[in-house]
Image 1 (cartoon, rainbow, N blue to C red):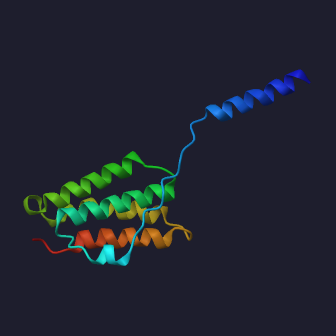
Image 2 (image 1 turned 30 degrees about the horizontal axis):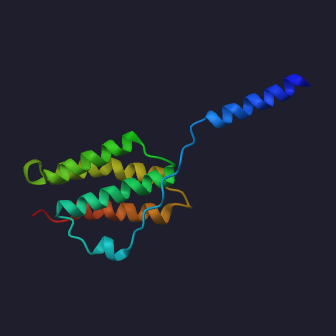
Image 3 (image 1 turned 90 degrees about the vertical axis):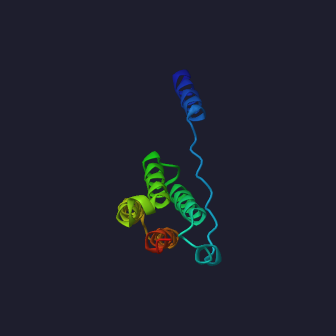
Length: 128
């Protein structure tokens, strides 16, 4: 019986030492915030990409370095759109949309649909 108690204590100790992954909070999205911005401006693009990143992290349980890198590529493409062209921006947004569509479930489709709208607004905003 002594070994069973020791085993239970060992399991408890392992459970306490495990790194607990804290789910990031859900970002607040309002229609006024989304529709009231000019997505030709860098500030609006940064807002949209940070919101998309935060929402994806909330629904996946944590930040993903691959998704973060895709967001940075999209930001870079949006920032340099005049030099590199609109095609590069479309190419940078496409993997983000695919990632979100792959993660979409019945429970998170409303939030991730907002993310897709934000990405569409970045992609389809006219060039300055």
